[in-house]
Amino acid sequence: MKRHINKSFFYILGLLLLTGSCNSDLLDQVNPNALSVDSFYKDANDAQLALVGAYSPLSSHFIWGRYLPLVIIRRSDEFTPSYLPGKTEGIMTKPTDIFLPTSWAASYKVIFRTNTILENVPSIEMDATEKNEVLGQAYFLRALSYFYLVNTWDNVPFITQAAKGTEDFFPTNSTPAKVWEQIISDATEAQNLLPVSWSAQDAGRATKGAASALLGKSYLYTQDWANAAIELKKVINSNYDLTANYADNFKESTENNIESVFEIQFQTDVAFVWEADVPGTMQGAMYTNLRAPISFGGEWVDAVNPWILDAFLEEPNLNNEIDERAFSTLAWNNSDSKIYENQPFQGSVLDPTKVYAKKYTGMLVDGRPNDGDLGVNTGLNYRLIRFADVLLMYAEAVNENGGSETEILSAINRVRQRANMADIPTGLSQSQLRNKIRKERILELSLETDRFFDLKRWGKLVDRMNGNADMVGNTAVTTDQIRQSGHPEYNFPFTEIHSRAPIPSTEISSNPNLNQNPGY
Image (cartoon, rainbow, N blue to C red; front, side):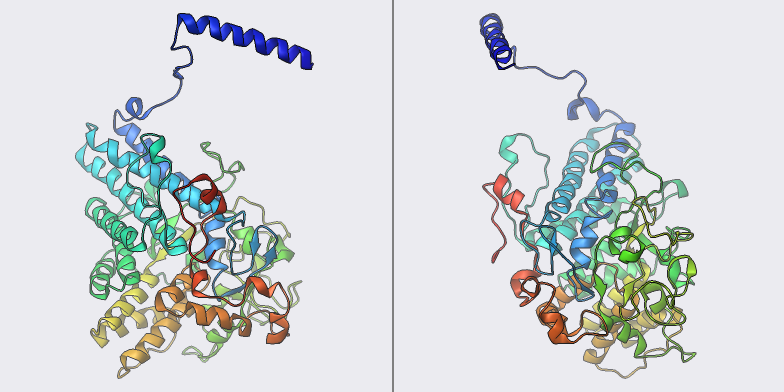
């Protein structure tokens, strides 16, 4: 075999040398079946196809289908994270964790595709309204991608043009301030170009309200309170409202409802292909089987920290009962707490000393079988921005800006009234209102992604995460037992360094211009 290979090698080498003397362009070939930018962007149909390609990575398992929620949510004080060597080794993520590169690379795939759209679609001859809608969505998707990149990693490369050659393959770190400036610019452009709504067949596309919400949220995160209030008020005055039933925000049967400002679209019964750009594949949500209890097909052992349940139990509703949002957020040892197929928690195989996540675990998915195997084809959409969140962000912006108490209480009480909770009274100080708003975000939005970012922007992250040992585990263990088990070296002490994830080691090793985040 070896002799045959060597003989073939010299034959091929001789042939190349011979033909090379006749045609110097032999190796300079073009694949006639491959699409290029110049040959593709010719008409409106091409623009729409490119846009679908830009949306596509969002619902892959490398971003919202699986890993981005895992990287963000599990690092907050909401969960006691599991320990899986080389994968997710506690709160303090390492550069070599294998899940880190996935969301990074897929997010830049969205950015590359939107950059290409923004560079090429303007020159296409097509209906002006349709062109604006395509460009508006591209601006929104780029802003959204950078929003999660900068909040997760801080010092990320800043790229607004499609790569033209190898010299563009090795970008440098940018500053968070520069990235935030671009997010705000892109969201503003999107807001100007996008429609108020879409037809049912286009559900899930970015709207003017989604752009305004992302813009307002970005101003809030950068502490521009006045502009945050202005943009969020636009959403409040638009065509959104709270659903009558809180749980409808977490079911398949009530997706894209009046409360949904922007949500990631997932499908059931799609082919499973690990991160391949193949039409019709890997558009099912895999986060469900990550967060569910192991007894019902869950893959991790992350437990909800009991302090969240305590927060729900502190204040009864107007009927002197437990805040009804608790039953859609958590599953615990309570006679009214239900799990899969509306079966009672009590008497199930779940540990009665633990508190379990209910949102996005399949427990609220209509007809989800109680069979110990959740599978990977869940079609439950992930709600990134809800109207309730907009109301609470608006209340926060107005309060921090020293604005009207009437405006603040109107927004926060609107959220509480849906949950049958008593109105917050008048006459509170700015500090007291701040605490009320932050507490309401726990009750309304727990386990929905933003908690880590909230703590970070409030300057509370390090203290809360170091105090995590006092809030974690289950109701039958002590703080000392928690600190001494579960590889505490990956959880404590949590420092300012850990407020940003390390840049994946694969990116650092392949890009000589990229510097690791300080401290890693």
